[in-house]
View (spheres, rainbow, N blue to C red):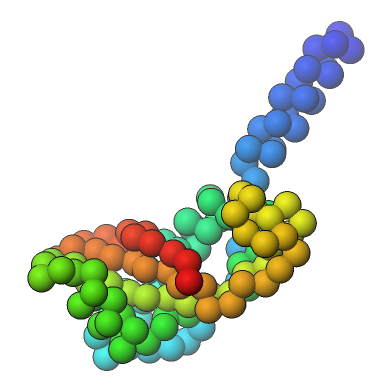
Amino acid sequence: MKKAISIFLSVLFLLCLCACGGDVSMVTIGTNSSQIYSDEELQDAIHVAIDYFKKGFSGCKLLEIDYAGDDKSRSYMKELADGDELTEIIVLTSSFEVDASGGDGSLNPNSTYKNWLWIMQRENGGTWQHADHGY
């Protein structure tokens, strides 16, 4: 019986480790507005980025996220669209802390990243999707 309980607790512990992701419990969502996108469209894109962070940034804590502005989004639209009229882009900016683990190992341990960009895209008014992130 003790062995079964020990195995169960070990499996439970491993499942908890696998389920860990980025901490978004205290994120502040900014209030920047847009002439291009509605507040609802901005919020939808922000929530896609938050979900991505939650799943892929273990050992990190998202502090704030906001719309980077129409000029930044237009610039990326021109750069990334490559003549395609179908791509709409929202650029977000965020800051987050990294714990001692360094996240997935690609981030600097015990550091804070500021002005981290999130590129969200959609085609013809569809659903926002994560396209890219970083500096």
